[in-house]
Image 1 (cartoon, rainbow, N blue to C red):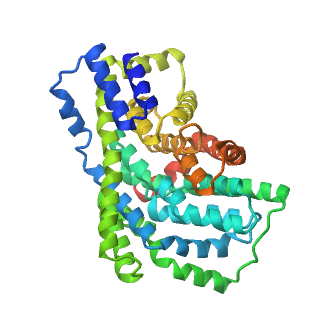
Image 2: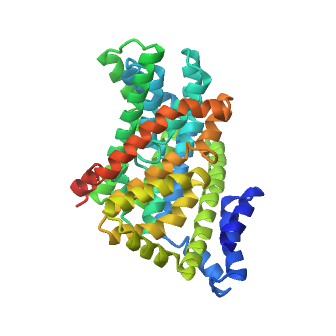
Image 3: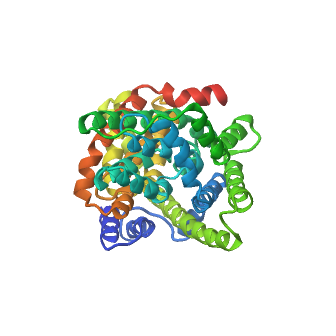
Length: 424
Protein backbone atom coordinates (compact mmCIF):
# COMPACT_ATOMS: atom_id res chain seq x y z
CA UNK A 1 0.00 0.00 0.00
CA UNK A 2 2.88 2.37 0.74
CA UNK A 3 4.34 1.68 -2.70
CA UNK A 4 1.00 2.15 -4.44
CA UNK A 5 -0.03 5.31 -2.58
CA UNK A 6 3.39 6.97 -2.95
CA UNK A 7 3.55 6.25 -6.70
CA UNK A 8 0.02 7.61 -7.26
CA UNK A 9 0.78 10.76 -5.27
CA UNK A 10 3.94 11.40 -7.31
CA UNK A 11 1.99 10.98 -10.55
CA UNK A 12 -0.87 13.22 -9.39
CA UNK A 13 1.50 16.09 -8.54
CA UNK A 14 2.96 15.88 -12.04
CA UNK A 15 6.21 14.03 -11.46
CA UNK A 16 7.73 12.12 -14.41
CA UNK A 17 6.98 8.41 -14.58
CA UNK A 18 10.57 7.47 -13.69
CA UNK A 19 10.48 9.60 -10.52
CA UNK A 20 7.09 8.15 -9.56
CA UNK A 21 8.43 4.61 -9.90
CA UNK A 22 11.64 5.40 -8.04
CA UNK A 23 9.92 7.45 -5.33
CA UNK A 24 7.32 4.75 -4.70
CA UNK A 25 10.05 2.11 -4.49
CA UNK A 26 12.13 4.16 -2.02
CA UNK A 27 9.05 4.86 0.10
CA UNK A 28 8.35 1.12 0.33
CA UNK A 29 12.01 0.37 1.15
CA UNK A 30 12.22 3.02 3.87
CA UNK A 31 8.76 2.78 5.43
CA UNK A 32 7.34 -0.56 4.27
CA UNK A 33 8.17 -4.25 4.54
CA UNK A 34 10.52 -4.60 1.54
CA UNK A 35 13.94 -5.08 3.13
CA UNK A 36 16.58 -3.76 0.71
CA UNK A 37 20.00 -2.60 1.90
CA UNK A 38 20.74 0.98 0.88
CA UNK A 39 23.94 -0.10 -0.88
CA UNK A 40 21.90 -2.25 -3.28
CA UNK A 41 19.82 0.67 -4.57
CA UNK A 42 22.44 2.32 -6.85
CA UNK A 43 23.71 -1.12 -7.87
CA UNK A 44 20.21 -2.12 -8.95
CA UNK A 45 19.73 1.09 -10.90
CA UNK A 46 22.94 0.45 -12.83
CA UNK A 47 22.11 -3.22 -13.27
CA UNK A 48 18.81 -2.26 -14.92
CA UNK A 49 20.77 -0.54 -17.70
CA UNK A 50 23.76 -2.91 -17.92
CA UNK A 51 22.38 -4.72 -20.95
CA UNK A 52 24.00 -4.77 -24.40
CA UNK A 53 20.64 -5.14 -26.23
CA UNK A 54 19.44 -1.86 -24.67
CA UNK A 55 21.97 -0.01 -26.85
CA UNK A 56 19.45 -0.54 -29.63
CA UNK A 57 17.07 1.95 -27.98
CA UNK A 58 19.09 5.17 -28.60
CA UNK A 59 20.17 3.96 -32.04
CA UNK A 60 16.60 3.27 -33.21
CA UNK A 61 15.53 6.64 -31.78
CA UNK A 62 18.38 8.24 -33.74
CA UNK A 63 17.31 6.50 -36.95
CA UNK A 64 13.75 7.75 -36.47
CA UNK A 65 14.83 11.33 -35.76
CA UNK A 66 17.13 11.47 -38.78
CA UNK A 67 14.46 10.03 -41.08
CA UNK A 68 11.94 12.59 -39.81
CA UNK A 69 14.35 15.49 -40.30
CA UNK A 70 15.29 14.22 -43.78
CA UNK A 71 11.77 14.83 -45.10
CA UNK A 72 11.27 11.12 -45.78
CA UNK A 73 7.63 11.50 -44.73
CA UNK A 74 6.62 13.10 -48.03
CA UNK A 75 8.27 10.26 -49.93
CA UNK A 76 6.24 7.75 -47.92
CA UNK A 77 2.96 9.36 -48.92
CA UNK A 78 3.49 8.97 -52.67
CA UNK A 79 3.43 5.14 -52.82
CA UNK A 80 0.67 5.07 -50.17
CA UNK A 81 -1.53 7.34 -52.31
CA UNK A 82 -0.86 5.33 -55.45
CA UNK A 83 -1.59 1.96 -53.82
CA UNK A 84 -4.27 2.67 -51.20
CA UNK A 85 -5.96 5.85 -52.49
CA UNK A 86 -8.48 4.07 -54.79
CA UNK A 87 -9.82 1.97 -51.87
CA UNK A 88 -13.09 2.98 -50.15
CA UNK A 89 -12.21 5.82 -47.85
CA UNK A 90 -9.52 7.37 -50.06
CA UNK A 91 -7.23 9.51 -47.90
CA UNK A 92 -8.17 7.60 -44.73
CA UNK A 93 -6.82 4.42 -46.35
CA UNK A 94 -3.73 6.34 -47.45
CA UNK A 95 -3.23 7.42 -43.83
CA UNK A 96 -3.19 3.81 -42.62
CA UNK A 97 -1.07 2.61 -45.54
CA UNK A 98 1.48 5.37 -45.04
CA UNK A 99 1.76 4.54 -41.34
CA UNK A 100 2.31 0.87 -42.21
CA UNK A 101 5.10 1.84 -44.62
CA UNK A 102 6.57 4.48 -42.31
CA UNK A 103 6.61 2.07 -39.34
CA UNK A 104 9.19 -0.02 -41.15
CA UNK A 105 11.45 3.04 -41.14
CA UNK A 106 11.11 4.42 -37.58
CA UNK A 107 9.29 1.81 -35.46
CA UNK A 108 7.90 4.53 -33.18
CA UNK A 109 4.24 5.41 -32.62
CA UNK A 110 4.95 8.94 -31.42
CA UNK A 111 7.36 9.60 -34.32
CA UNK A 112 4.67 8.42 -36.73
CA UNK A 113 1.94 10.63 -35.23
CA UNK A 114 4.12 13.70 -34.76
CA UNK A 115 5.75 13.68 -38.21
CA UNK A 116 3.83 11.96 -41.00
CA UNK A 117 0.65 12.23 -38.92
CA UNK A 118 0.75 16.02 -39.14
CA UNK A 119 0.88 15.81 -42.95
CA UNK A 120 -1.84 13.13 -43.05
CA UNK A 121 -4.27 15.15 -40.92
CA UNK A 122 -3.79 18.21 -43.12
CA UNK A 123 -4.27 16.16 -46.31
CA UNK A 124 -7.42 14.48 -44.98
CA UNK A 125 -8.95 17.80 -43.96
CA UNK A 126 -8.20 19.25 -47.40
CA UNK A 127 -9.99 16.22 -48.90
CA UNK A 128 -13.13 17.01 -46.89
CA UNK A 129 -12.74 14.83 -43.79
CA UNK A 130 -13.57 16.28 -40.37
CA UNK A 131 -10.67 17.15 -38.04
CA UNK A 132 -11.99 14.61 -35.49
CA UNK A 133 -12.03 11.70 -37.95
CA UNK A 134 -8.67 12.71 -39.43
CA UNK A 135 -7.13 12.73 -35.95
CA UNK A 136 -8.74 9.40 -35.04
CA UNK A 137 -7.36 7.62 -38.11
CA UNK A 138 -3.93 9.11 -37.48
CA UNK A 139 -3.85 8.07 -33.81
CA UNK A 140 -5.06 4.53 -34.56
CA UNK A 141 -2.69 3.98 -37.48
CA UNK A 142 0.29 5.22 -35.46
CA UNK A 143 -0.03 2.14 -33.21
CA UNK A 144 1.29 0.09 -36.15
CA UNK A 145 4.74 1.67 -35.73
CA UNK A 146 5.97 -0.29 -32.69
CA UNK A 147 4.65 -3.63 -34.02
CA UNK A 148 6.26 -3.84 -37.49
CA UNK A 149 10.08 -4.03 -37.21
CA UNK A 150 12.10 -2.14 -36.18
CA UNK A 151 10.42 -1.84 -32.78
CA UNK A 152 11.73 -0.22 -29.61
CA UNK A 153 9.10 -1.92 -27.37
CA UNK A 154 10.14 -5.36 -28.66
CA UNK A 155 13.79 -4.54 -27.95
CA UNK A 156 12.94 -3.55 -24.38
CA UNK A 157 10.61 -6.52 -23.88
CA UNK A 158 13.26 -8.94 -25.12
CA UNK A 159 15.81 -7.37 -22.79
CA UNK A 160 13.72 -7.41 -19.60
CA UNK A 161 12.00 -10.76 -20.29
CA UNK A 162 15.11 -12.54 -21.64
CA UNK A 163 13.57 -13.38 -25.04
CA UNK A 164 15.30 -13.34 -28.43
CA UNK A 165 15.00 -9.79 -29.75
CA UNK A 166 15.65 -10.90 -33.32
CA UNK A 167 12.74 -13.34 -33.21
CA UNK A 168 10.48 -10.74 -31.59
CA UNK A 169 11.21 -8.24 -34.35
CA UNK A 170 10.34 -10.84 -36.99
CA UNK A 171 7.24 -11.89 -35.05
CA UNK A 172 5.72 -8.41 -35.27
CA UNK A 173 5.58 -8.36 -39.07
CA UNK A 174 2.39 -10.36 -39.72
CA UNK A 175 0.50 -8.95 -36.69
CA UNK A 176 1.37 -5.45 -37.95
CA UNK A 177 -0.01 -6.24 -41.39
CA UNK A 178 -3.11 -7.84 -39.82
CA UNK A 179 -3.89 -4.78 -37.68
CA UNK A 180 -3.46 -2.57 -40.76
CA UNK A 181 -5.92 -4.69 -42.73
CA UNK A 182 -8.46 -4.65 -39.88
CA UNK A 183 -8.32 -0.85 -39.65
CA UNK A 184 -8.66 -0.58 -43.42
CA UNK A 185 -11.79 -2.76 -43.21
CA UNK A 186 -13.16 -0.40 -40.54
CA UNK A 187 -12.49 2.58 -42.83
CA UNK A 188 -14.17 0.81 -45.77
CA UNK A 189 -17.30 0.19 -43.68
CA UNK A 190 -17.39 3.80 -42.51
CA UNK A 191 -16.76 4.99 -46.08
CA UNK A 192 -19.86 3.14 -47.28
CA UNK A 193 -22.01 4.66 -44.56
CA UNK A 194 -20.65 8.20 -44.81
CA UNK A 195 -19.97 8.33 -48.56
CA UNK A 196 -16.30 9.18 -48.22
CA UNK A 197 -14.60 10.21 -51.49
CA UNK A 198 -12.24 7.87 -53.32
CA UNK A 199 -9.11 8.81 -55.21
CA UNK A 200 -8.65 8.07 -58.91
CA UNK A 201 -6.95 4.72 -59.59
CA UNK A 202 -3.24 4.89 -60.40
CA UNK A 203 -1.67 3.11 -63.34
CA UNK A 204 1.03 0.52 -62.80
CA UNK A 205 3.61 2.96 -64.15
CA UNK A 206 2.52 5.62 -61.63
CA UNK A 207 2.75 3.10 -58.80
CA UNK A 208 6.18 2.06 -60.03
CA UNK A 209 7.44 5.65 -60.13
CA UNK A 210 6.09 6.35 -56.62
CA UNK A 211 7.72 3.23 -55.18
CA UNK A 212 11.01 3.90 -56.99
CA UNK A 213 11.13 7.42 -55.58
CA UNK A 214 10.91 6.08 -52.03
CA UNK A 215 12.84 2.83 -52.51
CA UNK A 216 15.90 3.88 -50.48
CA UNK A 217 14.08 4.58 -47.18
CA UNK A 218 11.84 1.56 -47.83
CA UNK A 219 14.98 -0.58 -47.88
CA UNK A 220 15.55 0.07 -44.16
CA UNK A 221 13.41 -2.79 -42.76
CA UNK A 222 14.63 -5.14 -45.50
CA UNK A 223 18.27 -4.44 -44.60
CA UNK A 224 17.58 -4.99 -40.91
CA UNK A 225 15.59 -8.21 -41.33
CA UNK A 226 17.98 -9.76 -43.86
CA UNK A 227 20.98 -8.85 -41.72
CA UNK A 228 19.46 -10.29 -38.54
CA UNK A 229 18.12 -13.47 -40.19
CA UNK A 230 21.40 -14.14 -42.00
CA UNK A 231 23.32 -13.66 -38.76
CA UNK A 232 25.43 -10.93 -40.30
CA UNK A 233 24.65 -8.65 -37.37
CA UNK A 234 22.73 -8.81 -34.09
CA UNK A 235 19.54 -6.79 -33.44
CA UNK A 236 21.63 -4.31 -31.45
CA UNK A 237 24.11 -3.93 -34.30
CA UNK A 238 21.13 -3.65 -36.68
CA UNK A 239 20.00 -0.53 -34.83
CA UNK A 240 23.43 1.05 -35.42
CA UNK A 241 23.25 0.07 -39.10
CA UNK A 242 19.80 1.70 -39.34
CA UNK A 243 21.17 4.92 -37.82
CA UNK A 244 24.17 5.04 -40.17
CA UNK A 245 21.94 4.30 -43.16
CA UNK A 246 19.52 7.08 -42.16
CA UNK A 247 22.38 9.56 -41.76
CA UNK A 248 23.80 8.63 -45.18
CA UNK A 249 20.39 9.14 -46.79
CA UNK A 250 19.73 12.50 -45.16
CA UNK A 251 23.25 13.92 -45.28
CA UNK A 252 24.70 12.59 -48.54
CA UNK A 253 21.90 11.19 -50.75
CA UNK A 254 18.94 13.54 -50.30
CA UNK A 255 21.01 16.34 -48.70
CA UNK A 256 18.00 17.51 -46.71
CA UNK A 257 19.99 17.85 -43.47
CA UNK A 258 23.39 19.34 -42.71
CA UNK A 259 25.98 18.85 -39.97
CA UNK A 260 24.42 21.56 -37.81
CA UNK A 261 21.00 19.92 -37.97
CA UNK A 262 22.59 16.54 -37.26
CA UNK A 263 24.15 17.98 -34.11
CA UNK A 264 20.71 19.20 -32.99
CA UNK A 265 19.24 15.76 -33.75
CA UNK A 266 21.89 14.13 -31.55
CA UNK A 267 20.84 16.43 -28.72
CA UNK A 268 17.17 15.43 -29.04
CA UNK A 269 18.14 11.76 -29.16
CA UNK A 270 20.15 12.10 -25.94
CA UNK A 271 17.15 13.62 -24.15
CA UNK A 272 14.68 11.03 -25.47
CA UNK A 273 17.02 8.14 -24.71
CA UNK A 274 17.69 9.44 -21.21
CA UNK A 275 13.95 9.58 -20.51
CA UNK A 276 13.53 5.96 -21.63
CA UNK A 277 16.59 4.70 -19.74
CA UNK A 278 15.61 6.49 -16.51
CA UNK A 279 12.32 4.61 -16.61
CA UNK A 280 14.13 1.32 -17.18
CA UNK A 281 16.55 1.97 -14.31
CA UNK A 282 13.84 2.79 -11.76
CA UNK A 283 11.62 -0.01 -13.06
CA UNK A 284 14.50 -2.38 -12.27
CA UNK A 285 14.52 -1.09 -8.69
CA UNK A 286 10.77 -1.54 -8.55
CA UNK A 287 11.23 -5.13 -9.74
CA UNK A 288 13.60 -5.77 -6.84
CA UNK A 289 11.02 -4.36 -4.43
CA UNK A 290 8.34 -6.61 -5.93
CA UNK A 291 10.62 -9.62 -5.49
CA UNK A 292 11.36 -8.78 -1.84
CA UNK A 293 7.62 -8.37 -1.24
CA UNK A 294 7.02 -11.81 -2.76
CA UNK A 295 4.66 -10.50 -5.45
CA UNK A 296 5.76 -12.89 -8.27
CA UNK A 297 5.38 -15.92 -5.98
CA UNK A 298 2.00 -14.66 -4.82
CA UNK A 299 0.77 -14.18 -8.37
CA UNK A 300 1.92 -17.67 -9.40
CA UNK A 301 0.10 -19.18 -6.42
CA UNK A 302 -3.02 -17.13 -7.18
CA UNK A 303 -3.08 -18.28 -10.81
CA UNK A 304 -2.61 -21.90 -9.71
CA UNK A 305 -5.52 -21.48 -7.30
CA UNK A 306 -7.75 -20.08 -10.05
CA UNK A 307 -6.95 -23.12 -12.20
CA UNK A 308 -6.44 -21.06 -15.35
CA UNK A 309 -5.09 -22.83 -18.41
CA UNK A 310 -2.92 -21.08 -21.00
CA UNK A 311 -5.90 -19.51 -22.78
CA UNK A 312 -7.50 -18.39 -19.52
CA UNK A 313 -4.19 -16.86 -18.45
CA UNK A 314 -3.81 -15.00 -21.75
CA UNK A 315 -7.34 -13.60 -21.44
CA UNK A 316 -6.57 -12.47 -17.88
CA UNK A 317 -3.34 -10.82 -19.06
CA UNK A 318 -5.20 -9.05 -21.89
CA UNK A 319 -7.74 -7.59 -19.48
CA UNK A 320 -5.02 -6.59 -17.01
CA UNK A 321 -2.85 -4.87 -19.62
CA UNK A 322 -5.75 -3.03 -21.24
CA UNK A 323 -6.74 -1.63 -17.83
CA UNK A 324 -3.15 -0.79 -16.92
CA UNK A 325 -2.63 0.86 -20.31
CA UNK A 326 -5.39 3.35 -19.52
CA UNK A 327 -3.45 4.73 -16.57
CA UNK A 328 0.24 3.88 -16.91
CA UNK A 329 2.69 4.87 -19.64
CA UNK A 330 3.34 1.89 -21.94
CA UNK A 331 7.10 1.71 -21.37
CA UNK A 332 6.65 1.76 -17.60
CA UNK A 333 3.97 -0.94 -17.78
CA UNK A 334 6.24 -3.06 -19.97
CA UNK A 335 9.28 -2.83 -17.72
CA UNK A 336 7.26 -3.45 -14.55
CA UNK A 337 4.98 -6.29 -15.64
CA UNK A 338 6.97 -8.18 -18.29
CA UNK A 339 9.55 -9.62 -15.83
CA UNK A 340 6.67 -10.83 -13.62
CA UNK A 341 4.25 -12.22 -16.20
CA UNK A 342 6.68 -13.63 -18.80
CA UNK A 343 8.08 -16.40 -16.51
CA UNK A 344 4.54 -17.40 -15.50
CA UNK A 345 3.53 -17.65 -19.17
CA UNK A 346 6.61 -19.75 -19.94
CA UNK A 347 5.81 -22.06 -17.02
CA UNK A 348 2.31 -22.58 -18.44
CA UNK A 349 3.72 -23.66 -21.79
CA UNK A 350 2.93 -20.46 -23.70
CA UNK A 351 5.41 -19.67 -26.47
CA UNK A 352 7.55 -16.73 -25.25
CA UNK A 353 7.50 -15.08 -28.69
CA UNK A 354 3.70 -15.34 -28.91
CA UNK A 355 3.33 -13.95 -25.39
CA UNK A 356 5.70 -11.07 -26.17
CA UNK A 357 3.66 -10.04 -29.23
CA UNK A 358 0.37 -10.21 -27.30
CA UNK A 359 1.93 -8.27 -24.41
CA UNK A 360 3.27 -5.42 -26.56
CA UNK A 361 0.12 -5.32 -28.72
CA UNK A 362 -2.00 -4.70 -25.62
CA UNK A 363 0.17 -1.77 -24.62
CA UNK A 364 -0.08 -0.26 -28.11
CA UNK A 365 -3.87 -0.22 -27.76
CA UNK A 366 -3.29 1.62 -24.48
CA UNK A 367 -1.64 4.44 -26.44
CA UNK A 368 -5.08 5.49 -27.74
CA UNK A 369 -7.08 4.87 -24.55
CA UNK A 370 -7.94 7.67 -22.11
CA UNK A 371 -6.91 9.18 -19.80
CA UNK A 372 -3.16 8.74 -20.34
CA UNK A 373 -2.92 7.62 -24.00
CA UNK A 374 0.03 9.58 -25.38
CA UNK A 375 -1.18 9.34 -28.98
CA UNK A 376 -4.45 10.98 -27.94
CA UNK A 377 -2.51 13.94 -26.62
CA UNK A 378 -0.32 14.23 -29.72
CA UNK A 379 -3.04 14.13 -32.40
CA UNK A 380 -5.48 16.16 -30.28
CA UNK A 381 -3.02 19.04 -30.22
CA UNK A 382 -2.23 18.71 -33.94
CA UNK A 383 -5.88 18.64 -35.06
CA UNK A 384 -7.10 20.95 -32.25
CA UNK A 385 -10.08 18.80 -31.32
CA UNK A 386 -11.56 17.78 -27.97
CA UNK A 387 -10.82 14.43 -26.36
CA UNK A 388 -14.52 13.54 -26.30
CA UNK A 389 -15.04 14.07 -30.02
CA UNK A 390 -11.79 12.28 -30.81
CA UNK A 391 -12.75 9.24 -28.72
CA UNK A 392 -16.13 9.04 -30.45
CA UNK A 393 -14.41 8.71 -33.83
CA UNK A 394 -11.78 6.34 -32.43
CA UNK A 395 -14.27 3.69 -31.29
CA UNK A 396 -14.46 1.77 -34.63
CA UNK A 397 -10.67 1.54 -34.71
CA UNK A 398 -10.43 0.46 -31.08
CA UNK A 399 -12.91 -2.31 -31.90
CA UNK A 400 -10.81 -3.30 -34.93
CA UNK A 401 -7.69 -3.48 -32.76
CA UNK A 402 -9.49 -5.51 -30.08
CA UNK A 403 -10.66 -7.99 -32.73
CA UNK A 404 -7.05 -8.23 -33.92
CA UNK A 405 -5.94 -8.85 -30.33
CA UNK A 406 -8.42 -11.72 -30.00
CA UNK A 407 -7.15 -13.26 -33.23
CA UNK A 408 -3.52 -12.96 -32.12
CA UNK A 409 -4.38 -14.46 -28.73
CA UNK A 410 -6.10 -17.55 -30.13
CA UNK A 411 -3.93 -18.05 -33.24
CA UNK A 412 -0.31 -17.98 -32.01
CA UNK A 413 1.07 -19.11 -35.38
CA UNK A 414 0.50 -15.60 -36.77
CA UNK A 415 3.23 -14.40 -34.40
CA UNK A 416 5.51 -17.45 -34.43
CA UNK A 417 5.58 -18.63 -38.05
CA UNK A 418 8.18 -16.17 -39.35
CA UNK A 419 10.63 -16.69 -36.44
CA UNK A 420 10.23 -20.46 -36.76
CA UNK A 421 10.88 -20.44 -40.51
CA UNK A 422 13.59 -17.76 -40.74
CA UNK A 423 15.34 -18.18 -37.36
CA UNK A 424 14.81 -21.84 -36.36
